[in-house]
Length: 498
Image: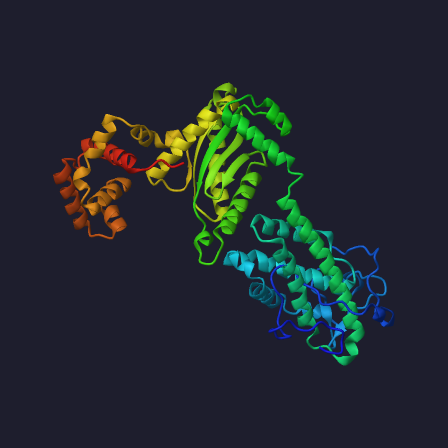
């Protein structure tokens, strides 16, 4: 590469190495005095970006006028080693992007804190997009579309939210363009000096724009001076939870208090990345939370007020008036409208869980704005009950756990019910068999299949349970007491979940 005004290859890296993680960096600038000797024109500053020219070039022999990308006046694509530079970039975008990510991990170790799935997914896709945008600029001599640098800005904001330092984010852009430069110029010839100079200047301009956008996006996230909407909503949430008049806080947030709120309490499980060796659990948790909240905003049309951490929290969703306050439908079925919001909320919780990639257990209660504190307390209690009784992920209301809820209220009756199963305490398999048998509708074959046992073994265990407790699962009169005893025992042993 000597003799072409090209930057030296990175120490310890082959000139054939391909680029790193997010953006792509630029090489050292060429001597300015060479500009007048360059037969190739650089882009005009007033050129209009081409928003459709990020497709791969048409390599057929005859190019039609409508398929030829718009170019800056007098622009000629730099040819390095006998091949147009844009074609070199587009020749292996995927492989090039993967090499860029590998180089980033090698030379900016802080990126190891990101989950592997994020590196091979989001970061690699961002890198592919930047390579195509770079090829567009090389092919046309025009700046990349505005949307490209908006995407760079958003990506930098995500890195700020994840806690990566600004110098690492900016270095990623430098490193990316540096590796792209090495990839494109490794076959440069002695007569390519003028084209190398033009390519060098173009890459430096791309680097300037990318780092400017990245720095702005990063600082916007770290110092959200314009986030008055979020602060106002948090003030409204504080007022609602305190039970104080919230009309003024709602007005400051640009909202009108609804007739009712659905008060949701969420318990969010850990994402596998939060436990992965070498991954920063804080970054993985914030990334999970960002996706979950984005889905909640989408599903509720940004009407929800949230106070969430990676492990869960509180969400308030506006509801219409209660069903008794609405005129009945002509169908005469007043119960239907009341259920529709809850079905929608259950679907919303399920969609948010999928977006976050984790199970979400949620409890909900409805209340007028001045009754939100009581509804929040009830929702937390219902969540405690659902957790204590190993309910599967989903949305629960008090009606869904009435028996369990009542049995979790401390009383002498609860303690005595729990004591009915004390004889099974030392035989763990007997209690497991009893729970499975009840959950399976008292079907011995279902129980046997669920526990991988022979049906005769199930029969033996059920007889043993009856002998020890005096409660026979085959006798309908005892089934209710057994069910209540299991619920009471779970309540006695379960810690409160908050």
